[in-house]
Amino acid sequence: MKKLINSVDEVVTDALAGMAAAHPGSLRVDVAQHIVYRATPKDEGKVAIVSGGGSGHEPLHGGFVGTGMLDAACAGEIFTSPVPDQVSAATAAVDRGAGVLHIVKNYTGDVMNFDMAAEMVAAESGIEVATVVTADDVAVEDSLYTAGRRGVGVTVIVEKIAGAAAEEGRSLAEVAAVAERTSQAGRSMGVALTSCTVPANGKPSFDLPEDEIEIGIGIHGEPGRHREKIAPASEIAARLAEPILAELPAGDGHGVIAFLNGMGASPLLELYLMYGEVAKILDRAGVKVERSLVGNYITSLDMAGCSLTLVRADEEMLRLWDAPVNTPGLRWGV
Image 1 (cartoon, rainbow, N blue to C red):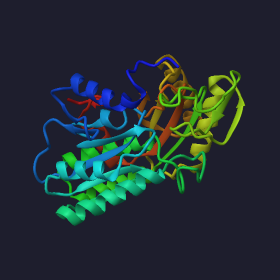
Image 2 (cartoon, helix red, strand yellow; image 1 turned 30 degrees about the vertical axis):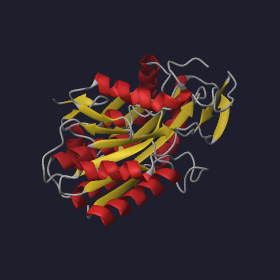
Image 3 (cartoon, rainbow, N blue to C red; image 1 turned 30 degrees about the horizontal axis):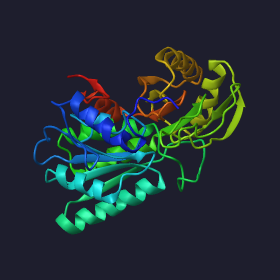
Image 4 (cartoon, rainbow, N blue to C red; image 1 turned 135 degrees about the vertical axis):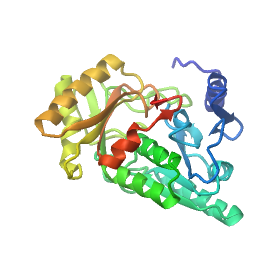
């Protein structure tokens, strides 16, 4: 195993220390508790948003802390949920008097620990917490890690749209409602060309022959629907797009936000090539792309591959998507 690390036991701590050094003006990082905060809290009377999950998916979630997105992000160990004490500390710290929204990916540990944290802060300080759970992966209905669909790419879209709604000064109920609507409107599917290597394990999480790909993988390297022989990008794009289109909510005249996400090791040259193939499929299907995003935003360490997320977006979602955002991982309009 070749990794740019000091010690497998300190990977997350060292990475957070580096993040603090790289963004001293915009982020405040509690390295001991593994929490990333905005350096300057938002105004009093506005809803705050907290998310988090296992490390190894960067820039999710810490890279999306900043104006227009998250107020804090809790980093678990590699592919491991943050603990309730982390989440409750972050929630209490960012509350500006209007309540806090938790955005949680649908993994058993994440859901359980965020629920416990919400109960803790309600009992200790009376802070009102609302929760939106993302569950957009069409590959599997249940897995070893979830009851129901896994939360994957739509999480980025939900964090952006909810963050913009909170910046406008909307109530907690209103921010949670648009976040839930966005989550329900999204569907995702991923493909792996290689496994990933968790530093503590020192070897690939699963064996994948050179001439095979895994369709429908999760972001922790969980197995998907099936394996098949490597194929041209046009055929792989169809393997991702067709199951999503089959389950995409019906539109009311609006198109989609199309998100082609890299899993960590595939170069942008390949991601843009894949997006081009997806765009052709959507055009043939009569699905208008209203907005697009291509790049590495919710990764799986050094896995090669990509995922596709489509979100059926209404006018309000598109307006909130276009609103200014200024974070290490996503920035426009500022």
